[in-house]
Image 1 (cartoon, one colour):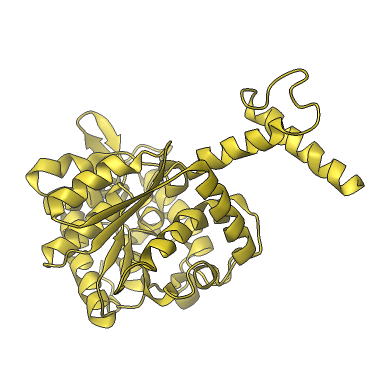
Image 2 (spheres, one colour):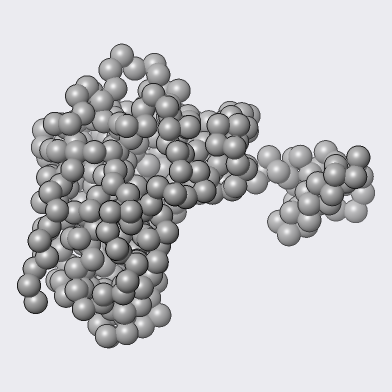
Length: 336
């Protein structure tokens, strides 16, 4: 099969790939790169191209939002491989799990590192500010906005801010966090993989979403510098050639997702922290503890409703009961 002609890699913060190309139509036949080692080498090279373009287009001191997962750690390691060491910022809460891995990666790569540990009140305040800025209370929009808004306040304290690097969009193009029902080596797996990646990417890699100007509202000063490193046409073209075997495979007896990215990250990291490439991590809303903190705030609010502790306690009862209490309180508010 003829190799696709790749678009030039861009230094822009992101590209709305679904607005620039037709990516929703199934094309499983293009997914012919099965060797995870070859895919890893390709990703390493593309990370270098993308970062080089970003650094040339965005002057100033680079920053990376280092979450502790393989996506952002790979970006940090690739930047260090180019001789660039961005300042790392990690946002977490008391229930978050990101800080340990992020700190280990930052130290091994020689990055200055700032950990923002948000208490319950700070998360609630940032959520309220996010609702006001975005004009929506949608759960996933707000829980993603909270750590970004916390980062904005940290960026405001810096004398110079260049590109703000993130590993966002890697999950979409590399099926991060997904599992295939079909055997990895089967033809059905190729079709299944192609379908789920195209469906998610077509829905997310476009401007017209729930809040089209999300980044402009949350970080108006920095929106043009907020780099979703993997969200470019060229990265999409590269990733759509990956077969299931390049993305899923065994590592020490455990099935790993984003296999080729983990291999690339492992190769880029110093020996002392290569294991970080294989750490499992949830989306930042959960791994930073934002979701758990907001859920606890909801329980506390429910516990303060009239008569709330007469029969059970919203602090300890199941989540379904808490959600029902909050809905009934909303109905009561509409009556008054």
